[in-house]
Structure formats: C-alpha cells, structure tokens
View 1 (tube, rainbow over the protein chains, first blue to last red):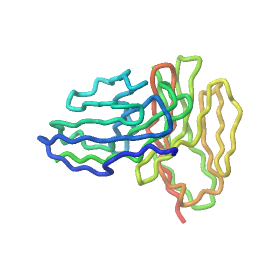
View 2 (view 1 turned 90 degrees about the horizontal axis):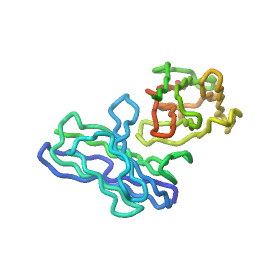
View 3 (view 1 turned 180 degrees about the horizontal axis):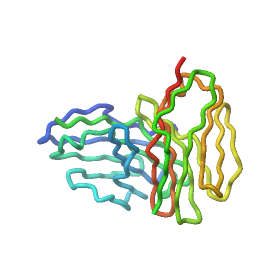
Length: 114
Length: 112
C-alpha cells in the first residue's frame, strides 16, 4: 500500500461547526504533515508530526487542532473557521522527519467554509 | 532563507512538442534536496523526482528528464513529446535542514 488516504474529499462547513479531516497511511512512514493550499498557490506547511509527536507548528491559528492517535493516522480538527480558511488541505507522509526520501501526498480535502 | 523561483507562470504547447520547466533556487544549506511534483486538476501532488545536492547527474525517466546544475542553482525539467495527460501544475521544491519550500508552480497546458 503506497497511498495516503484522506477523507472526506469535500467538506462544506459553517463557521460555528466542528469537523475533522482524516489522513491514513500504511507505508510505515514515521513523519506526517498537514499542508494548506489556496487556489493557484503552492502548498504551505501547517504541522509536522514525527514519531507521533508534534515537531513543527507553523504558527497556525488555534482553530486548527492536529492530532496523531497512532503512527498511521493523522487528524485535523476544525472549529470556528473563517471563510478565508477555505482551501485544499493536503496530508503527506515520509519515511523520516526530513523527507529526503520524498513525500507521499494524499489527494486532499477541499474545504469550503460558509 | 530558502527560495524557489519558477518564473514561468503558465505555458501552452501543442501536443508532441518538447517543453522545459525552469526552477531556480537559493539556499545556504550545504546539503539539500530538490523535488518536482505534478498536481493534476484532481488535486493530489504526485512525486516525480528527488535529487540531492551532491548528485549533479542528469536523469531521464521515459519522456521526462531533469537537468541539475549546481553552478547556476537550477533544476530544470523537460518533457519530451508532450501529451494532453501532461497538463497540470508542476511544482519545484527545495528541502534543507529546516523545511520544505515550494515554488509558485508552472501551469502546463498541452493542446491536442
């Protein structure tokens, strides 16, 4: 299994809702990442988990809360989002924290905040 | 600080033409990795190639080839005999000791 699976593929949520994005990989990778990508822009790093511990938080607002329950799963909990948070959220994994082996990306969750 | 520049915002070619996507980078790290990713309209980022800073050998994979020149800090990507399925946004990325930096992407449209 050489995939990173993200669910849901599309999500529409109101500004008062609480929702979660899920990411799963079974490649034995020990680093997992959340990226945010606005239209026509490159991906921007949000969080890095290494061996299930948060190692980088790129000054992301607290309305985004990551969680790594085990080495295969990565969640992103969303609460009280703003319309400007609408974007494609990409999960990625790599063998180790610095992805010198390359990153495997999921197909993303397209989030719309209304 | 790291920087990746993809000066070509959009390129259109007719099918079967060759096309080169440019990537110029800046870094103070002595060890770093360069990547190319393809992002089709479906959204996922597809890994194409990784090259480390000590390996300046060019690489060919089917219709794809990469030219890494450390002297000019460039890592260019050529698609030979382009096909409609090559239409996508292509990102060049640099990873040093701290983080990955993506270029702004080049949108390639291959016209049948």
